[in-house]
Amino acid sequence: MRKHTNARLRGALDLLVLKTLACRGPMHGYGITMHIEQVSKEVLRMEEGSLYPALHRMTQSGWLRSEWGVSENNRRARYY
Image (cartoon, rainbow, N blue to C red):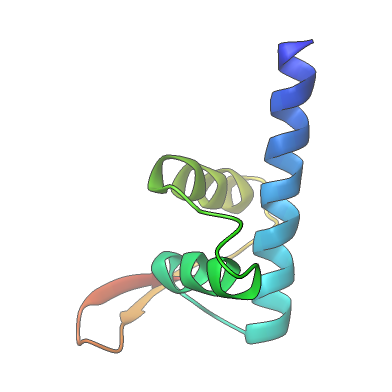
């Protein structure tokens, strides 16, 4: 049963990320995290240990593309 629950959580996270990018356009990981937390009124909290593996998995599966860019505070960031 635990595997099934993890698959559901993974699928929900994937949908949240895809919906965020569809609405907001290209964003870096921190921006995605902040948007999801803001929209959910901080009910949903994103951890790096969940988000970045999900972004990597979705990129490997061909669901997302990524490219390097410069963030708002002039740092190098991967945009999805």
